[in-house]
Image 1 (cartoon, helix red, strand yellow):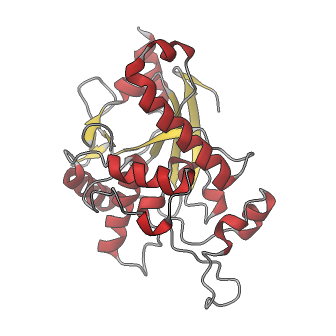
Image 2: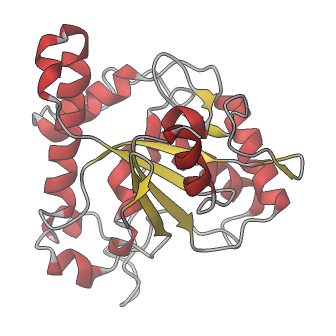
Length: 262
């Protein structure tokens, strides 16, 4: 059996429908000789830099891409083989379905949703939302607005200067929007918003409390440490640092080149 087959089998054993998949990135010196990768690598490095500043030096900030495993299709787990595209991602040039075969040798982190055991109806909702996003163009403008505002200090009033609108997403906002679609249909009283309640102790422990101090609701009752994280502000690191919020996700396993490393 090939390395890819062994990697798929190992990773598949840790996946359950609704799991979020993050992939990490490290700079490859060979990319210096590949001009076509320069803009991509600059964007990835800047995303990591922002995530490090937002969550702190001792957080998990090296992920640069977010996907979601939607393995249950019409009540049947379609498996991991090459032609079974059961992972949804918002990527360039358009949002699409991909297979575990295509990503199994990357630096993969598998994160399980903690606030509910997702049943078949939940998965149908997530699949419906994914189908609606599938084929939409990647929102380069949203990413550019993000970089200008958060990384370069561009005026906040111009935050939506390049954003193409709510129908187009980047990777992590696309996955967050699937969970938001489920919440919309099931109701706010049943499904909490993602990254809505913060764990103040964790923010203070990492020395980044200043990043949310101005976002806390001043009219909230004592102990209700609530902020509103807009979908377009959700980064890959939000999913891996859910302990800063209400532990919406937990790390199940980590793989690198098909080998389990965590």
